Image (cartoon, rainbow, N blue to C red):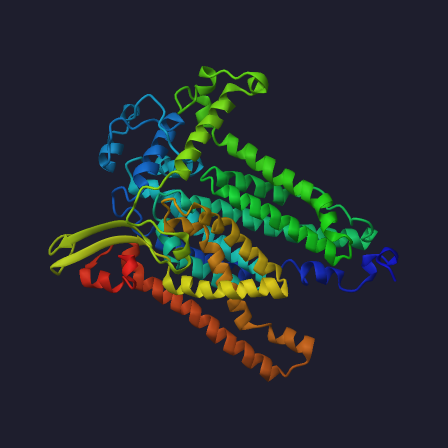
Length: 539
């Protein structure tokens, strides 16, 4: 029988199973079972991130740029030049008046969203509070623990694996350190993770609606239309905000846009549409583009509202000073000024090749070959509790080694399962790697750092959790129903897998605890610090 003369898909058994894998949610679980474990892990992770958040009470690493720029945004709505050349936070903020900054715009090379988020903490707790200027980073770092747990639960249909993902993110050293430091990358990580979660929800909801439509009208032609997709629209806003933190969000936008269309193509293939890819491009691809790209662009441009409203932002008057002829004359001067500003910033980024002792090629990121030292001070006996001749006080953005090294092995498994099993979950994890990691390889000449990889951390966690799920195996009762295997065999398989998966999680927690002093600027003997520098390249 040809496909054109097949009966409506509703009469074919398993159409819902093929689209949703059984269900988009875990059935039979109470609210307490679904939420309380994740909330508990989030609370513990949040406590660790907020504990002594204000230490050290001084600008750490690139906080010297972003904290000051956030302060200027709070006062003026635009980054002004810090003519006073102030470096110490006490001087910067206790003298916190508009005249600390000059009256001309400063050339800054990153968009304003991350700095506006830093400014929220300064507004709430005072601009001279180191707790305040790190507050927003700690908030999004904490919330991302809960979010990754919900993402993993939705992807793997397991509360246990969702909790495991939350634990692993909570104890990753790189995520932890950047959740306690006012840099931009943790905010980029947040908006990328939010967009990923929204697209996962959109995937499930779209397939639910597609299943209902097929049941009512069949799957003839290109298949049913799915209609308005608000979750995907929200993802477009989130990706626009990601780009508004750092331009590297553009790559994630491109990869996630392709990912969501491929999910739709898979859905149409599952209901018997031929040609399924062309149907997805026409039925879903156009809508996906409109929901993501224009929405992200409009959101991004809107994040420059403070610059548009100012008269003194960098290059703000360039358009008026350089009139355009022809079609360019129809473009508002403000937009032409912003475009010229972006051209200058792009030239800066691609030409940045100044040597730095902690620069790290992206090849080394997955093994944490060259972590970034955010802060280091030597102490002598009697200073800040040092009880020996020489002590160290350090903050090192080092991903928990056990997690990252396990993640490298897990990446190989994920690649195999995507290539040979066509597991959509493996593809989703790889999309995170493709958007957050692979683009950096085109900048081999640039000065780049391992701490940029914090955007990748959630996907490293998901890769490890994917493999933990394989170790656990299927639920014993489900295995018995499907294959008729003996209950004892299924239970033994589950227990052995649980022991192996649990060992990985416990080792990650223990490793994080071991490195705690060099994550939190604790004063420890130099020998203790040296014992934590496992590789020569970490020093």
